[in-house]
Every structure is written in C-alpha cells, then in structure tokens.
Length: 275
Image 1 (cartoon, one colour):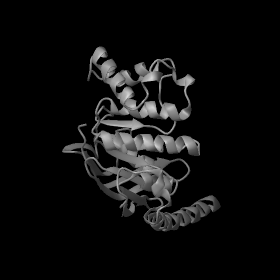
Image 2 (cartoon, rainbow, N blue to C red):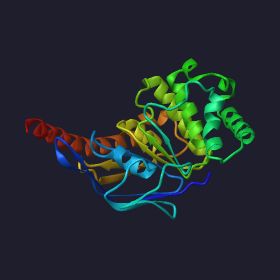
Image 3 (cartoon, rainbow, N blue to C red):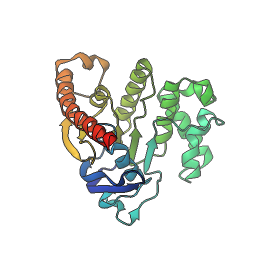
Image 4 (tube, one colour):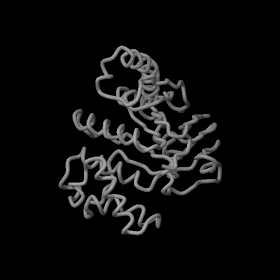
C-alpha cells in the first residue's frame, strides 16, 4: 500500500448563508496525520469535521491554509486537487451500485480510473475478497446483503486501488450495535494486514478509541483542534480491551474533553435560535 501522511496547516473555511451571512466553519485548524496512522477526529455536531474531510478529499475548497498528502499540495487558496484514487472515501450512507454484483462493484474504480485492466482488477478483487472471507458473496447484489456486509464490501472497494489515504466519514453510524462491532473488527484486521493511512470521523467515543492510534478533539464552531489523545492500547485490538482499566481511563479523558465542547455548542445553538 502506497500510504502517505496528511498535513493540514492553518486551515480556515468560510462560507455564506442567507440566514447567517458569513459563517466561519474552520479557524486555523492544523493536524499532522502520520503515514500508516489510524487518526480519528471527534467533536460536537456542526464543528466542521466533515467539512475538513471534504477539503482533504477534494470535494470542497478552503479559504486559508493548505493541505498536503505526502509531498503533494492538494489544497490551498485557489488550489483544489480533484478527487482521485490517491484519496478514497467511504461515505456514511454507502455507495455501492445496486445493479452491479459485489465483484463488479469492487472492480469498477481501478478499471474506470485506468489503474488496472478488467482482468487484472477481477483477479485482484477475488484475491482480496478471499483473504477476508468474502469470496462466496462475489456474485451477490447489494440488495441481497445485510448493511454490515455492504459496509465490508465498500471498504474492500476503497482499498483495492492502493490509495495513499482512506477517508471515512462516520461509515458505521447507521449500523446496529452488533453489525457495528463486526465491521469495526473487520476494518482493524484490514488495517493490521494492509498498511494504509486512515482519516476517520465519528461521534462514537468508544469507536474512536477502539480503532484509532490517536484521537483529535475538535472545538465547537469555528472548528479547530482542541487536543489530541494518544491511544496507548496495543495492536492487534480486540473487544476484550473495551472493559480494561486502560480503555476506560482513556474514555473518561476523551468524554470530558468532548463534553465541554458539546455544552458550548448547545449554548451557541440556544443563542442562535433566540435571534
């Protein structure tokens, strides 16, 4: 896997709305995500987490600052690098083509982007599916699978082209607790066996600590990085860790940091509604 780090320097994002006029979504936001690191970002709703991920993905422009992937500048004022195979995104609501089989879905990206021939992509996809125990579903359609199974296929589809960075915007939010646990462990197995850099957004603090090497906490809007928590849990991870003293201590620390910002966000919302 051709993993690269992500350097986010002093990123500011302003936009204009009819109701509020100019809104400052991100203000002087800086993060350095190391190559092959699983970095998770948490924070109150509306703090700019998804806006920042969209800037890295190439879906949105920034107002000030810059973003680099490895040595490549991908975002700056007047500079925006279009989405491409170097930065693959797994969305919250999924994105499998319902008219394609699992195998066709997984192969689609590298073929369309001319990274692989159709034959090479099919061989590579079958190998990846087999290694994670999904070979038997390659001829199924998305509508024939559970939501958890679809999530696993989407992750494989994102990784098949060896992206430099995998961007994940609350990808497991809609799953029930059992499916979420299964897919989290699936992602961890892939992370342990396929070196890659992951930038992951979630509201779930338990999920953030279970998955991440470090967890960044965003302030309420305008979003900036309040603190970064080092997750000192050993890898490979297992659900047995979730009841450990170390895990519970980290969760208490993270909860306190996020709760303070959530209270500020609530107060700001109340003021906004009273105008």
